[in-house]
Image 1 (cartoon, one colour):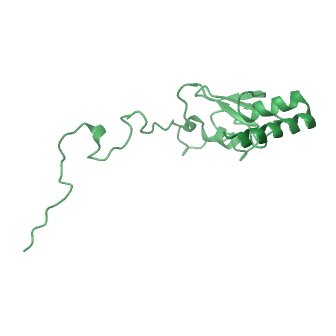
Image 2 (cartoon, rainbow, N blue to C red):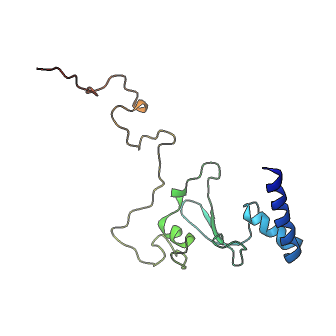
Image 3 (tube, rainbow, N blue to C red):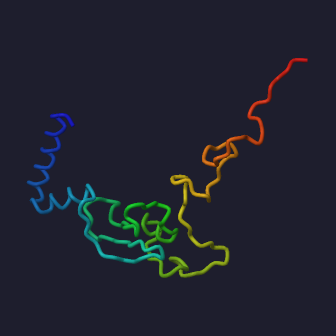
Length: 150
């Protein structure tokens, strides 16, 4: 960070302090950086994720959030569709149970699964025949066919 940029940040902090007081300024800056959160618990899903809501959050769009059950190895796909709708303000009603926010259970609805991804080389991933994770040293087919003029 350059010297001029640091001075601009300090000036912004000072003007906010004068307008709102030290308590509100520190609260806002800590919340902006994600170091401090205040809100009430509104629910928990079957994966153990806990969902929060803050009524008077100073930053628009950060009034709902999730704390994942596995804090060391979380993935955004661990949030079921019903909770994702609530988090992104698509639906204001809380999911009541596993049936979803509407309370209706559908025959075609599948159980939510976490995206296993290819981060750790899971066996559930698709790998093309020549991928090095398969461990096969020989190829079943030639990648290139030689051309011979006639």
